[in-house]
Length: 502
Image (tube, rainbow, N blue to C red; front, side):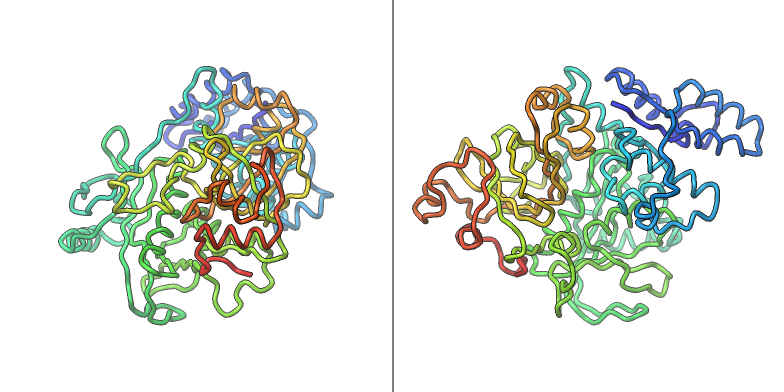
């Protein structure tokens, strides 16, 4: 496996002589799994332009311990790539960022690790977001490939009350800076006295690693432009400090679950947006968009769970699933497939099954992260070549002979025959260990990247499917089904028609 390391991760803001602890751990893990660590030569040229000679010499001495990517591909004549980035190549830094990302785009390396938010933003534009990793995300991904390493243990999010939180926790420092200490503390005490609920994850050291404070509103929003009076779920606080465990994605999922439980079709939050803003990068991938600006100057990001007035017209099925998640298009323009899945992989991908959705009251206040994300990867030896982005997948739990869950395909990669190629495609979505992937790679492999939307309210057993005339025998491999069969499965399985678009 070849991993390109951006030089910015080797530079500590506090001291150029020190490499941050998480970077040291990451480099150690990469060496232990036998990865080839490379540096792009343009990164070095960029460092040479640093006017601080002492810092420049220290950083260059670190970088030169790693081999360069030889004859890296150059994007100058790739108009499709540059147009996708909307890049005018106005300066040397822009050229360097584009060239570094292009090395991933042209598959000269499997992964890029960088703290540059601008490169991450560009990676999403060209479909490389699963292969361009922040340092903490990379550490979480590559630790899975250590021999004998157990997969990441589940991390709970607990339902709690605001008054049980520590007002002095570091997670609140940035909010105090944005709103003012007195105003923020007054707000915190007020919502504590109201008995406001929250979802919270505590780190091993007792500090808050992730926090969602929410409330249901039925009012107009004073903004530019103004937003009309409507029942909405407001995410008053949406913050994650523990990265690498997809807690932000989990909070998005839980937010939509809360909205659905309460019969709401809109969710919003306010945010002082920064130039390279990880929160906006995250939520925009699941349909939040800047709808207005309030009197404080905060951007208002709104998410609609159901399209209105033909808002989905002109969107592809996959774009519809992204923008209006958990709604999805399931009309005749997309194909439908039943995908058999073994119990050990079903348990990891769909940790909320057999619950229809995560429920706050019925789940004893605790939630499991692993497999509870929206964007997932499934590996199969099926040789189907018809499946494509936007298609519907229904997962069939083979041992129990039951259809459990429904998702929308993003991309499909066929005929992969070595572990590194599989790892490259599943990226940071994987729930598989390196040993598992190496065993799987002994036969031609298909990787399906998809978004999970719902569990069936009434999971359908094979005998029911057989009685309905939907299947003649248990599916042994991925099988395409007709639209009328899918319609019966959807109806009998209890998929809510509010969230399906025809």
